[in-house]
Length: 100
Image 1 (tube, one colour):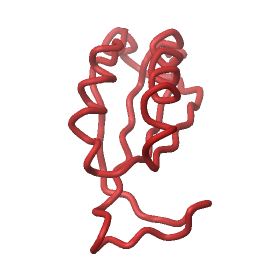
Image 2: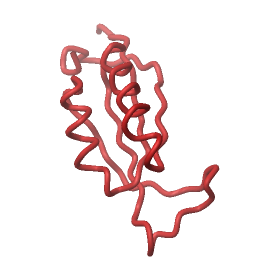
Image 3: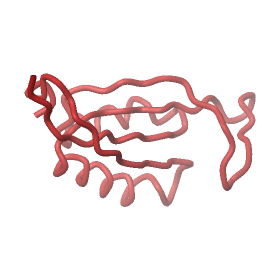
Image 4: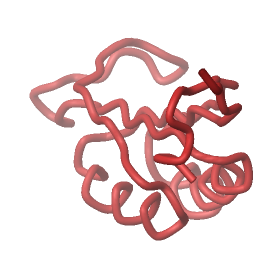
């Protein structure tokens, strides 16, 4: 079995950004993604679901160069204007050709 080293990019954002973020990551080279509802508390405190909507956690497994493009785009277009965080983890995947 061959394992391929890739990057797991995780983005936690306001749910109103879901469609736009999906378009962005696909345009930047992501082949797929997973989205789940998210909630929690951070530097801005706990968000009120009634007023602000739910958060999402978007995950995509990509080569390093795609991960860097996604992070650069988030920093440029989203971090200054929205409640968005992102982080990257090293992962080893089976069937790596699906992600490249």
